[in-house]
Image (cartoon, rainbow, N blue to C red; front, side, top):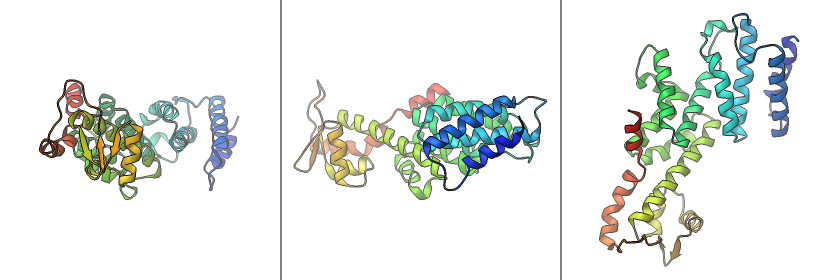
Length: 275
């Protein structure tokens, strides 16, 4: 089999407007079969630079489409398949260059954050730093795509959840695909803060809960509260009473409110397990 058929499949995948989801899945399956016939699913010393480029482009296209189809498991498989190609120097490809490596790697780092896999996150970063000659994270932050999850992870460790929330807004996201995982990350943070709030307070005004949970409106708070079986009454949210805990005064609630976001998630404990 020649590379002509693979080129044709890639052209159809990258057409504008993009094909339907069902067509994308079919084309990706076809492209991977073509790579298999060309013995190019894994790089080998005998693989030509042009074929290496086509193989990497095919897998990167599949990885990015997996994000748009909201299939993180498929994306992870594509990323694992891409690793042997990413270990090759850019000069091995024709045309030479890193392709979409920065974008795909940044997305994988963001996926690890949404899963709370900080050990995996730092393992990937350490590998990148080794490639850069041991330079620390400041160099990585200069990369548009990799710098995004690096900054998010640092803000999470600091408890700066307002900065995380701001960075997940449309203007702060470096690419369309990043928006998918960014929304998941905010949802994870919101869920953890909600769980801590249930333990910290007997109740909260809806207006306070809106800011605490980074929700856009009080109506969004009411909808979120009903999803967690909280009681909404007279402008307040009432949390389930924790067994063995007394009812706190309003003053205690207000004093604690500034601490909940900071202590909501045990990111410091996660960092200690990595270090």
